Every structure is written in structure tokens, then in C-alpha cells.
Length: 212
Length: 254
Image (cartoon, rainbow over all chains, first blue to last red; front, side, top):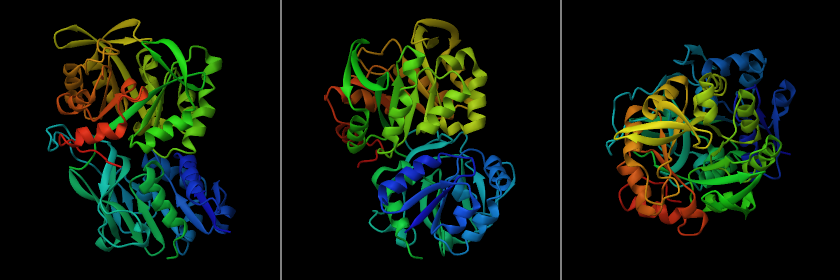
């Protein structure tokens, strides 16, 4: 059986992630867990995250799950969401927090203060709402999702990947930034697939069946 | 720029059921919350807001299983407001499946609640709802308790203060316009939108599709909230989006 573990280290809306996975993979065992044993026995892993990076990394460290997640990241299909995407990189400017270092690069804040959008309205931070994702690189997880599809974003920080090969999707908000990244068995998005209606559910469905 | 403007249908909830009334009178059961939410999702709603109008605190708890049921089947952002008084209330709603929690009266009586909740759960899930009434040209006052109590607070100043306290978004309702179906208070919407760097949801007064478009184009809102034009079948969300897209407003068309 396909055992999918949503890593629960005490931060973020893990339930909505699990519910979306259950909706697209009724045959799989979807478990919300903060147990090392579950992460070790999982077939695939979802790493969510919400809130401030220092708190997220702090909780991951304190829960003792960091090593288990790093171990799983070596070979298991893994999906990072929002702060769970940002955590994959080296360091975040949010509280100068060291992160997991699974992909080279850093996390920086939108600097859009005083800038205006094409329609004359201010750029707001956080970026909150539906924005388009350009599929800048082919990837198995983009199957059956139209290029330029809308996904739901809520964030003030974004990743700057050091290697452009890791960027598989981009979004334009004041500047073009990496909104989906991937490397070997890892895929991660700044947006929330679990809140992105049909396109988001399709992405999770593709992840559930992904054989990297 | 491709961030879409949002359309948010708002549903009133009483004792865990969606109700509809005309000017707060004749509350009638409007049907199953999951079915209604799913219908709006299928029509392309960008989010759904539930406003808990329940008077008694016993009945208030009934909203939790309702949110759980909706969140297990509808995969767009859900906001729940009404009767939020403590960080524990925020936690319970988020745990039930809400993505954002609206705080109105309690933000005025206890602004620290907004700061505490934003610090604990992140600004992205804290929506401060402001009910405002015109008191002079270009001046609006904040009211609480469903519009019954004047606070002496200036709406623009208050929105700025709440943004500083960590609110992630402002839900701005014009009491003068609410229920009139004569369009948003565009002066109020513009004044608040220009004053803060967090998103503003315009609310109160929508009677037709041009009102929605005006809220974005003239009011500078990031999102528009409406109830009756969708509930009573006057328009679908999809129609509204196509109408607005035709006026070059960026919309997510499903």
C-alpha cells in the first residue's frame, strides 16, 4: 500500500493537505504524523509549513524530525509546500534561519514597498490570492495541468534557487520568482495545491503516482 | 502582473447551518453547507467566507463540524468570522479547517488579540473585519457589535494600525451601503486601499456586476465580497468573473 505521511512538526495546516491527498488517492494510506517511525516507513512524504520560518525550523529541530526528514529526502518522493518548500534551501532571510540545505539557494522577502501594479494599485505583501504558474521546465508532476494555470499563494518570502535547473515553475509578482522547484525525488511549491481547486488536486494526484 | 483579483461569496451561518435572510429578517435554512460551498467552488469562487451570526455560545460550537465537513470536500481557501474573542477561538477554527479567521469587535476591544494571533499562526490567516460608517466627507468611523456601537476610531487609521499589528488582510464593510444594493462605498474603499500594504476586500452594497468591477477599478480593492447577488441566483460567480475579465480585470477563469 502507498503510505503517504504528512509530516506534523507542530506548524501549519496539515489537515487540509491530508484531506486533499485523501481526495485524490482514496486507495492510499494518508497519515498525519510526527513520529520518526512513520517517516521511516513512509513511501512518500509531504512537508508542509506555515507561519514564520524561525518557528518552523525551530519546531522541526525540537521535534527531532529533522534527521528523519533529511534521511527520507535521499530517496523517497517528497513534496514541500509553502514554508515546507522554503525550508529545502540553505538559509532564509526570515530571522536569518539556517534551513535544510537540500537545494542550494536562499529565501528572501518581497521588496515591493511603494511599487505599483499595472492597474495603478499598490503591490501588497503578502502576495495573497491566485496567480499563474509558468511551467518553465518539463516535469512529470505537471501532467494534465495546463501551462499558466492559476494556483493559490499566500506568502511574503520566496526562494532564490542557486541552480536554475532546479526551477520548474515561475510566477510574476513584481518580479519573476521560482514558484515550483524540483530535484531528483523532491518537488516543492510556494503555492498551496490543497487550496488550488482542480489544478492543485491534479498536482497532488500526480505526486501520489510519481515514480522518480 | 498576473495576480488575479478575487470574488468571495459570503455565507451566513446560524447554529452550524447556512441561512439566508433579507436585511437580517426572515432567516431561512439555505441548505447544506457542503453543497452550497461546492456549488460556489464549481462556479469558480476564489474563496468562501462564512460569517457566524449565531447569538449563543453553545450554538457557536456547531460551526466547527460544519467547517470540518466543508474543508474535507472543498479545496479553496475558507475564511470564518464572527464571535472570535481569543487566540483559542482562532486555533479551534484553524484546526477545523478554516484557512483564515476574521476578527471584528474583539480587535477593537483587545487589539493585542490580533498581534498575538498573527504572531502565533501567521499574518496570512488573520483577517481584520472593519465595519465603517461615513461621518464627514472623506471620514469614516469604525463601528462594532454588528454595527451597533460607535468606537470613535477613524477607519483609515484603524486599518493602518491593524496592518502594523499583524493583520494579513482587511475585510472592509460600508455600513451605509450594506443592504442597499447601490454599490460599494468607493471613497472608503479607495482611502483604505491606498493607505495600507496588505490586501483589502471590499464589502457591502453590491447590487450588480458593475459594482464588483468598480470595487476593483475605482476602489482599488484586491478582492470583492458579495452575498445576495449570488445566493438568490441573480448571477453566478462565473458570470461575474467573465464580466470583470471583459473589463480587463485579471481574473482566474475556471
